[in-house]
Amino acid sequence: MAIIVSRYIQGFKIVFLSVLVFSGMTGLQNCGEPDSPTYECTPDITVLLPEKAVSTFFFEEGTYWVYQREDSLYSDSVWVTLAREEILPVNTKVFPDFKKAKCYESKSTLLSSSKNYFFISNGYILQLRGPKNTLSYSEEVFVLYDGWQKTSQIRLDLIGNEYSTVNAYGDSVYHQDSIEVNGRNYLDITIYKRKSQRPDYLKEAYYAPSFGMIRFKDNNDAWWDLIRYNIVQ
Figure 1: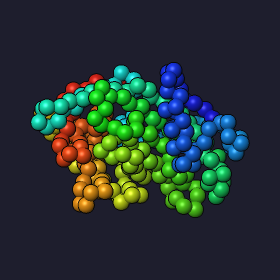
Figure 2 (figure 1 turned 60 degrees about the vertical axis):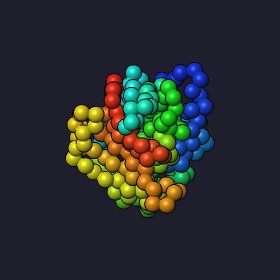
Figure 3 (figure 1 turned 90 degrees about the vertical axis):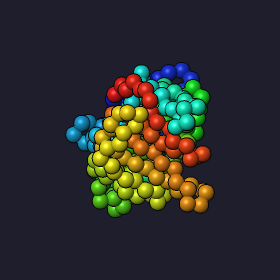
Figure 4 (figure 1 turned 180 degrees about the vertical axis):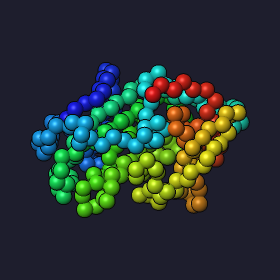
């Protein structure tokens, strides 16, 4: 396994275990496992994550966002605690019909917040769901695991450089050309809507490339807007 970037901060070992679990679920694996492929992950056999997804959900340390609730009574700041990038080989045990050597890029952004209004888990994880050369997939399918409270443990599916309009859970994804949030116009918007356990209740989130989440509705039907940020990618 060839690792592009691997930055380690003391105290985050437990966090990384959850990332490795996700990797096993989606057909990627780590070097120490007995069924690891013997091939080396060279650039010619490596499939990179879709550019749009990386721009929207992968951020380096130094990135932060400040959100304010629509009534201006509450605000919270969120920042990147760790960014991790890897190249991982296809797990041929999970995908026994996969016959060729191929590797996939995986990226994760770990987050923290000052008041913990926003997320249950701790970040965005972008990686492969299934390799193209299997009986189940006609093309590469990537997935986003999102740990925010508004969309707890949901995932956005990406085929090519576009998001699927409906994910595996039946949640809906829409595209909008632009939206104005706190006096700024954002372009190429991805809108996520999820049915929660309450009947006919929708959670919503708006994402913009190079900015991440710019607007969302919380469990109390209150809207939060991005008011300040510093983006490092």
